[in-house]
Image (tube, helix red, strand yellow):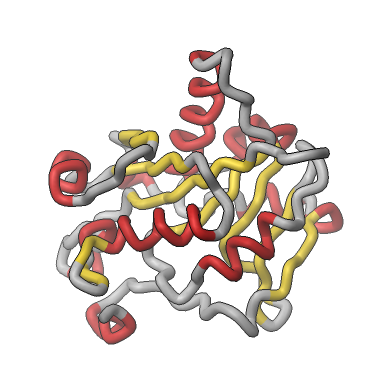
Length: 205
């Protein structure tokens, strides 16, 4: 397939409960909100279209972060966990495809998390390159352990949305389809830590 449309899907809805309730999207990284960095990483990794799922303080994030050209998706149920944000993001990709007939529909979604700044464009590009068809499932691996980003071919979206509950996101679906998941080792180009607690903030500059 020449030039598949692989849309970046950034999950940035978390409320940072263990960070004293600071939304992760607005954590400071190199003088700008962390969500801007995460979008740039997706773009530099090859995603020309990026959908960003917002939740905690979504209105403040819209006001403070500069996200030109992104499709911003509000997830009012963000507190239920990552599953609801993943569903909201996949729904928005489908809706976008229905509403923009002149725009090629997305063949896959490349999903990343706002609180993993150790994962840069090199890892995004590697997982992006694993795309073969809308039936592709691929995930970054770190010393063999599956992590983010993950790539979901469009054939899988309905199944993933149906099984994405609570904080599990697509974990159950990926486990069920484990033999179909292409693992893309990224441990040499990225670090898969999360920014979850005040002790993790040293990772941000």
